[in-house]
Image 1 (cartoon, one colour):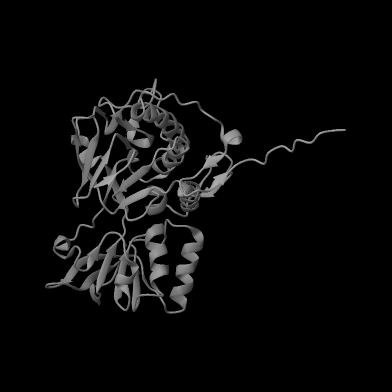
Image 2: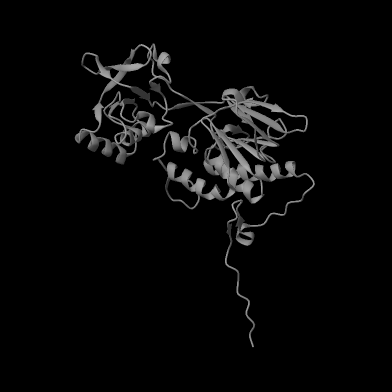
Length: 351
């Protein structure tokens, strides 16, 4: 069983920044996320999209923001359970909680912070009749382990950043890469579109547009796909893997059944104090919560995480009084032994 001070459900920007604020209070954190990597939507959906409202950054790519947050919290040594969804929660007699994932991993903590953004993400699946028969047997909706595709014939469908970026990445791993999109225009970053065009010209990517995958071929495992190109007869294409990257649909998922007060698919919290839910010890911060005047902005999530951690400290240590010290004065002491602090003034006597 994994034990920690604050169990954070959701490893998006708000969840990651919570680790930093908790670390300043000497509280350890562990994060659960259904996605295979930290960053939430910033990593999975729009890593190359610029964000313009992060303080001190006139412009920063979503993926780079994730990298900066991971660098910032490294000294506080957070734990991660990735690729698993928080499934059930049980309150113990001492007021602590045990959260179990869909894969059976158990986590024990006195405080749970739900920072799940818009909720857990489920892939948007193309309307292909027998596609479910080949899931995890040649059909995937996200890429967790690129080495799985080494030396294989891969077909990717989609028109966003994920489809473009993975098509580019897999050209150095797969035997062949075919990118299918129902339009000639792509929604991704311009440099990625240009790179795909360049790889197409070099014969490293087979680009078929406007077209759609209409069928799956195979018996026990995927053997190919049926492609329908606009204005032409459908044709078969050999494939070992079909990766449908049509984005992720946000849902509260099992959290909706935890007894929390829900309003319009968001968790109601007490914003007058600490963003605690109707269950003491469970907080909700970031886009997953709602309260009067709520704004779904990353910077608002950072603010909510900061106040939540102060409340969590008092819950964990009710008999201790915490005196806040500014990082400009006290510095930052990491759990790994590192310390960042401002240079001390030199005291020198004058004769």
